[in-house]
Image (cartoon, rainbow, N blue to C red; front, top):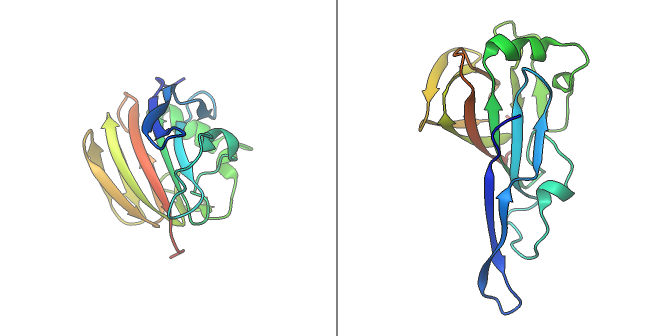
Length: 178
């Protein structure tokens, strides 16, 4: 299980004053089992502009999906184990990695890495710890802690070739398909 991510969320009281409405470990963590990635859902919006009213936690009330909702956003932290563990989990038959969903396409024909996929979104990826290779159909680049990648609806995969876990924060924003 990944290290918990503390999430502090602000809001408004009945008088319209700013307050803290949540402070603690993010409650929604998705793990596909041993050797697989684990993602911690931090926040989600269903519209742009976002609705900042209310106190409901959308990560708890909305169904989990990789891409953001149509017209919305998702903010998550993903923990990538080393490929020495993860690749076998990606290749296991009948896993959720085989699923196709609206706005998400898995590239099962790509021989370079079993994690190739694309989403109808623009993604901001910030490496928080460790290092990871960002793979495109053509080319790859090593990203280290503090590096940022702007992912623009391209077919891609993530490859952790080290023997240490890598933690990446992602903001996914719905976009028109390429």
